[in-house]
Amino acid sequence: MHIPQLGTEMIKQPQDLFKMLDRHGVLLIRDENIDITAFTNITDALGHDFLVYQGATISRPSATDSTGTIFSVTSPEYGYAIPLHGEMRYLAHPPELLFFYCQTPAKQGGETTFCDAIALWQALPGPVRQRFSSTPITYIRCQGHGMWRQLYHTESLETVKQICMANGVIFNYCPESDAVTTRYTCSAVVNTHRGLAFINNFLPFAEREMVSPTPLTSVVRFADDERHPISSDLVRIVRDAADRLTIAHAWQCNDIMVIDNHTVLHGRTSINDLNRRVLLRMTRSRH
Image 1 (tube, helix red, strand yellow):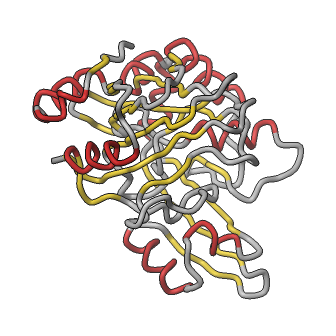
Image 2 (spheres, one colour):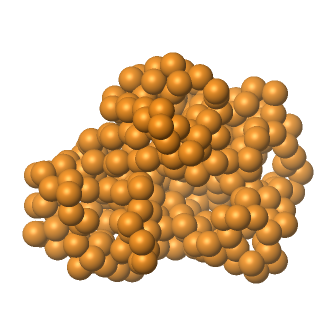
């Protein structure tokens, strides 16, 4: 997998930039003069319909801008490595493009990892491809003890319900435990302009459950067998195939990464320097 490096002058030629993005899946924009204002202007030039961070699996720090669409992706409590995933692929309408902006790189660790989801699908053994292509997966998430308020950034259960309905998510509320449970079923494989892509949130859910000593309240299952965890052997096969295709990007100050969230999985190595500051903006549509 190759990541082309561009200068900010390419923003004036968005169609050429998008052609490169469609070919490679990830682009690096590097210019020492980029700041948060430039990042905002660049993302405004390339996308629209920016998303607020509602319904995620972890709570993000508050937005850093007045529009509520630019977030920090580094929190002190989340310094662990994050497996490869597609952003918010547990919703029917995930973002199309991701824009990462590095204000402060980590002194150690904190690289962002990338894997071509089309190449990963092709690298999986035939029986694994058959299982995933023939059977949807279901994300079951329980946000207990009021955690839903942090994840949806609201006190309104009706707002949560409306967000779920708009994204094809089944919603259930238990007043005794003040818990919201959601279920979303979809294919782990998506047909894209470059072919079939293994783009989903399978690995973060499955790997976390595989190593947890206690049962988890948020899990992924094959839709035809929701009572049992997906086999550890299958999880390892997917993870090992992804590892062989993964590259890591060591951030420099003011780097911007543009990611096609339909064809490229991303993750992160563990962070030992919590002064690292990388911001994220997500859009459902490109210009």
